[in-house]
Length: 249
Image (tube, rainbow, N blue to C red):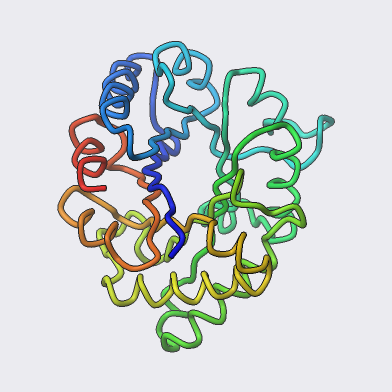
């Protein structure tokens, strides 16, 4: 069985000011105490550079990047800009961007490829809505697997790409998929990766779970079959809450 190192990643979303850098520093200290687990924070663009200064060896990443190298895209952030600020990774395809900014899977794949071209590691998000889940497990597995295939860049490899399964109906709602539901979806995604990339790459690529992960449920989530870590939202904003999830890994 392939051994995949756990990754606990925090996504601060549209939260965080310079006054909150103390939490970044405290989380970095917790991360330094877990040599067996990877920990990273994905922060608003305004916080990346100052966070890098206090994060030590803990990677800091951005929450999105544009697929173009540069140009007339007001308000967007390029991969080169993220690197210039000190970022080492980026999230692409988060459900909130797919929903509110109407990002397509093709655009997500292009963003991932551009980010990789600049040396950034990438967390690529996928996940189904409550309506799709209500159609049954088989329908949900098929839908999310198809979204994964449509979002994969041609150069996809486990050395720089991580998949994050986030059921849209569980993000910020307090609802969490059951351990059997998570294990079944991750097994379907693992099979899809193996089919698309071959056994070596497909088995080595990490698949995270995200969706209202907290200290209370982290142990059950993180030890479900084929779960290689978590992408954490609100609970990553403080060292106290995020530390409990790191400890459960």
